[in-house]
Image 1 (cartoon, one colour):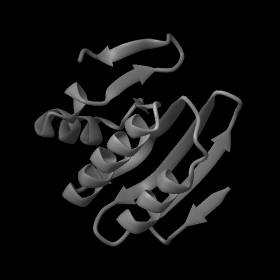
Image 2 (image 1 turned 180 degrees about the horizontal axis):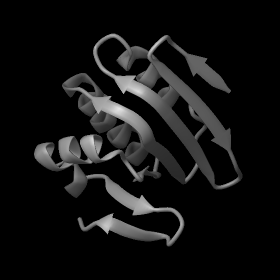
Image 3 (image 1 turned 90 degrees about the vertical axis):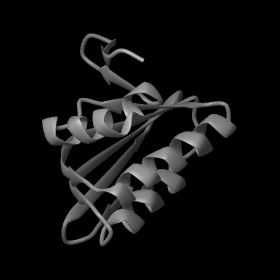
Image 4 (image 1 turned 30 degrees about the vertical axis):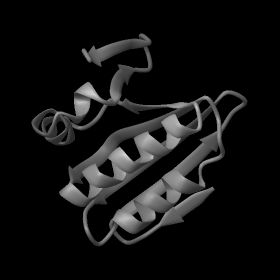
Length: 116
């Protein structure tokens, strides 16, 4: 399943126990709707993995969408984890304190990059 806007591309891969959403581009006021829609449309699984390695910009609207997605996934008994964010995005996650709320993991080593 794919959603595409000019500045944001979302790709969803579904497995038995996890859904992986890969975002590429910019998450700002113009693209946050597509970002949010892809997260909302993801099938319910125990784990929602959001790959942010291709995101070069995460605005306040994107941060709000991440918080909402985190709350929605938790309400369903699941967990949202963020995979290897771009350094610019990681600074936003740290500045907002979101790295303490949503785990950031290294999928290769299956370990946390930023402690909670």
